[in-house]
Amino acid sequence: MARMSAGVRFPIGRAMGLACAAAIAFVPVAPAGAQAQENPPVPSVCKLGAGQTASTCLFTANAAGLPVFARTEFPDEFDVSNKDPLNTAEHELFHAIGFTIQYKRFADKLIPTPGAGAGGIPAGSRAYSKDGTAGGILMTLVPVADATHSDPGATGAAPWPATGYDQSKDIMQPNQVVGTRLNANDAAVLDDAFGWATSGIQIDIINVGGTLDATDLKFLTDAVAAVNVFYPVKKGSPIFTWAVAEVGLVPETTTWVTMVVGFGLAGMALRRRARIAEAA
Amino acid sequence: MVPVGAGREGRLIVRRLMLHMRLGAYLVAMLSGVAPMEARGGNVSQEAVAALLRQANGSDPAARLEASRTLFRLGPAIAPQLERAGARPMRTISTSRGDVIYTLLSGKLGLADADPNTFGVHVEANTSAQDVDRMGRAHGFSILAPGQCRPDLSPACYVHLLSGKRLADVLRDVLTSEPRVTTVSLNYVEH
Image (cartoon, rainbow over all chains, first blue to last red; front, side, top):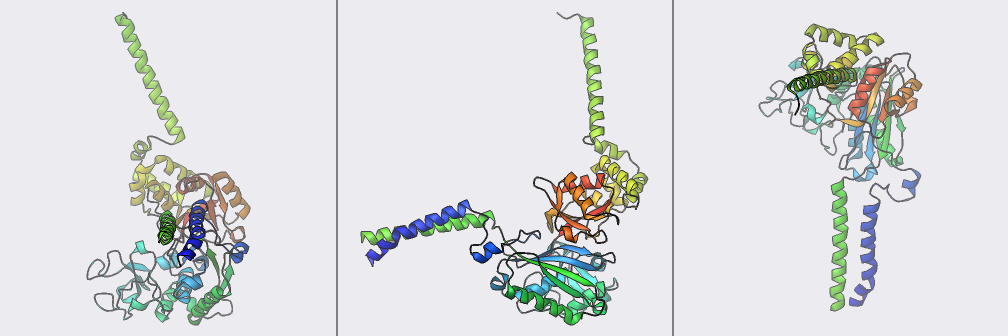
């Protein structure tokens, strides 16, 4: 046993050292492997950071204020790393086709949530109201600093506005709740803002790069199908182009430092263990 | 020993020289649009600022450009007056030119929910992707996806800043020198 340890000591220690050197020398590298070389992840323009499930940006509207284009970025191999890829795909697609304060027709319908700042309702909380009144509220949103998301604390009963909708399982809340899907309450919001239920919406997916494979794309087409359940494609439906990509993430400096230190410590521990075994 | 008379004359010359230098510095600052903007902004009436804001948001490209230049020249001191005239921090992809000017002058360009290296360009109907490309060469940006550049969309194009360029500076440059640009917007992000 001691001999075996002595035999593998050097290669492992050297490998650790080489790994450390490689990590330091080639910080922003693309993932290794033939597939990554053929189809490298594209750079992010949607500020997709480490730990985020996806990010949507480049919101574009037509002259009538209807969403016509947006781009969603997923981290590399999102179908593997994500606990519920379809949830993420539906959430981001819903942002893309209108669930965002960046589209004026959505933003114009926001009112301060009645009772905000008291009774457990966050200060700065906003609500989407179809007619500007408390009675017309379709969804209670988090304050603006958390972008455009439904408030998971809103129960639909007092002290919250009496919508009757318990948002604790809503798909548009800020943090992923595995298993949640788009529902009629979500659909009612965008129908009010853009008339999607009346006009329908044709969503064309374009893969703008990166390593999205067939499995990833299946989740995305399933998300489109989920939207079309509420807004079926009709003759003359407005066309929305959903650009999708898997992007390469450049880990933050602290992540690299932690990794390099970790490799170093692991190498030292292995050498020490081998030395002790050799002495024994 | 310096004669008393010569000393007085010398002091007078120095004082005149300093006065000329101060006037010269002021003139340079006025022309380059840098230093005593606050002082000038304070002298502008509320009505004048409101009129400039209306012109900046108007449909006449030349008047829009001139009003924007004047507002930037007046500087951060007029931000409260702009606010009283109805200007607000820029939001949504359909933000007005006046709101962008107010945002830049008041230092409220928040990038927490936007990408600092890209922005949207909104243009007049007769503007082509080549025109936007030319603007980019002049101000330091390039079109993100040339095939998706359409003047009827809001924004018409998203563009990417070239290395070393600062978003606030480029937005100001574009708004004060490109008559075909109606407004600009940020590349907002949702997660």
